[in-house]
Amino acid sequence: MTKIERNIYLNKIIEKKENGLIKIVTGIRRCGKSYLLDPIYKDYLIENGIDENHIIKIDLDERRNNKYLNPDVLDEYIRNSIKDKKMYYVILDEIQKVEDFESVLNGFLHIENLDVYVTGSNSKFLSSDIITEFRGRGDEIRVHPLTYAEFCSAYKGKKEDTWNEYIMYGGLPRILSYKTEEQKSEYLKNLFEQTYLKDIIERNNIQRIDVLDALVNILASSIGSLTNPHKLYNTFESNNIKDVSVNTITSYINYLLDAFLIEKAERYDVKGKKYISTPSKYYFTDIGLRNCRLNFRQQEESHIMENILYNELLYRGYNVDVGVVEIREGDAKKQLEVDFVCNQFYKRYYIQSVLSLPTREKTIQEERPLMNISDNFKKIIVVKDKIKPWITEEGISVIGLQEFLLNIDSLNL
Image 1: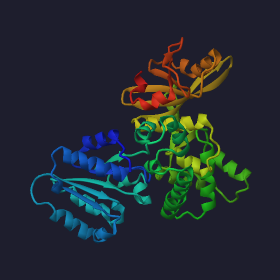
Image 2: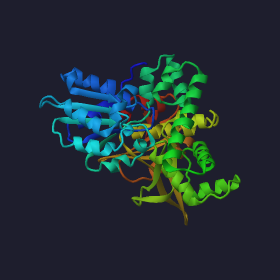
Image 3: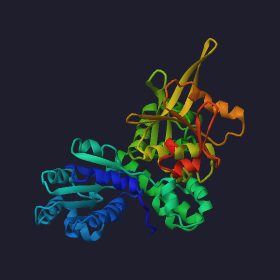
Image 4: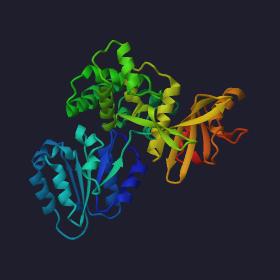
């Protein structure tokens, strides 16, 4: 398989190295968690002088390692592998296969010269509640599917094909190893049905599989649209799916969120500086999974672009909300939408996503929500067209989508 550089995650792990906590690598299945630890992080350790005898790596999903699925055997093996007082680095892949793995990991925290890294891929470990299990003792590194820049760096086809490939099949790393459209499509569909949904159904003992299926389809067909469980309930009613409650829909959405299959963007009142509880927007963690769910129909570029931008901003470490700017027109109040309000420590950016700005009128229309924000944080319009970055008459930065995605510092251009 083509080597993929994932330096942003490698640097996060390096920052947490030997911090006395369990490093817990989370993320949707098949997004590259295991690959991040071995070979990427393991190679880093060796290149920086760590003796390979001080790196203990166990792939718990391999048959030859079945004996270590017994927690007592695993615990004893790790402890007996420590031969001196130098630091040992333990990498346990698919830790969820070990019964009562929580107590094993907690025991390792008492060994001063042990630095522990774990991944997992079943429904329990994919769930965000794994961090609750280790509150104060675990340190999460969240891994996402490949960004467009990561995808381009490993893509072996024609450079001009990368964008169309990415917006169709997404960024799950194994997609890069398939050559035909049929292979890519089959891989994504099987993964969705046999892995993601199966995990969610089994973990949460879901009885109404028809409702879950329908909900996934509705969310996939309406990425970037404001919705809430009540609106979704009405959609179910109009499609003649009976005996569904708002509470059931809410629970099923939470299951999808817990499995990192979708992400939720809350609405934020920019002027009032407060969150608006409902409605919200939902985006898919991987656009290829979203597309396969709809049999690769409904390829609305504006919504797909918005989803990809949202994922990119999460990857860059921002908290991302949907902005609402209230203005007054005569005696009436009107709400304008800012696609993304991005916060990271003391930094904030306001971003609009648009396919093109063909006329001055269209530019003014897209600028309007941004111009009604009184603070001095940077305001940006990202355009799908390939353009050179420029600044509007009102001081709004405009940048092309691919340049934005390929330059990690594009927010500061």
